[in-house]
Length: 216
Ligand SMILES: *[C@@H]1O[C@H](CO)[C@@H](O)[C@H](O)[C@H]1NC(C)=O
Ligand SMILES: *[C@@H]1O[C@H](CO)[C@@H](O)[C@H](O)[C@H]1NC(C)=O
Image (tube, rainbow, N blue to C red; front, side, top):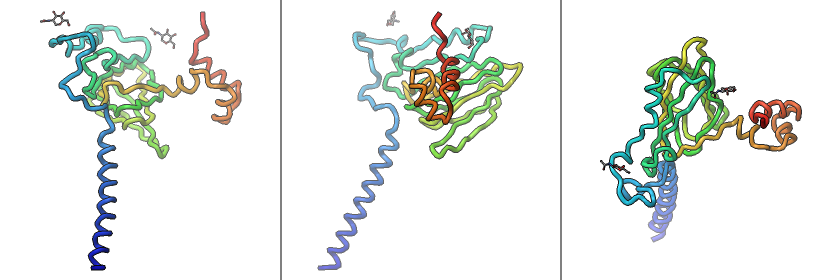
């Protein structure tokens, strides 16, 4: 009887480890938007929708406009602009980079980003949780993935050509946390920042001034 008891003990221990593993994997796989229990989500107040609801025309201007913007510009099609994306776990952004412009270091807390460079060239990079930097120079046609939640950036180094990219996100509302703005543009105390960056208050104030234009 004794050996079989031992076997049962071991089995339940193994079963527990297996269960813990399965749960961990399942939780990892569930790291996207919450699942919905309907085909799509109709906004409150609207009782019926047609194909118009599933169509977003806000990017037409990008195709029609010949002139490039003066600064780096993001045009989004997320749940906020395109309510039909609610519950669908996807969204888009079109990124326009005039010569020498940068999309400063930022994160998307709720999604990984899949960037397709459609024109020009782009220097991209991200930093993983071990502080390792991964950089790449993309040419038109290349696709780069920025893993979910990690700090990343894009830069158009060309002195004469703009760059154009389309990014897809694995969330209807990926969210953006811009590092320069979050750190220096939200009113965190100068002393705290000076100590955090092993710098001085004067330097911090200079960095802050560049991000928060003085009221006119
Ligand atoms: C679709 O719905 C919109 C309002 O949501 C309405 O303006 C439009 O006429 C509808 N189109 C058709 C073909 O029914
Ligand atoms: C472009 O950026 C510059 C400097 O940051 C700013 O002064 C200017 O208003 C911006 N232009 C547009 C069209 O947003």
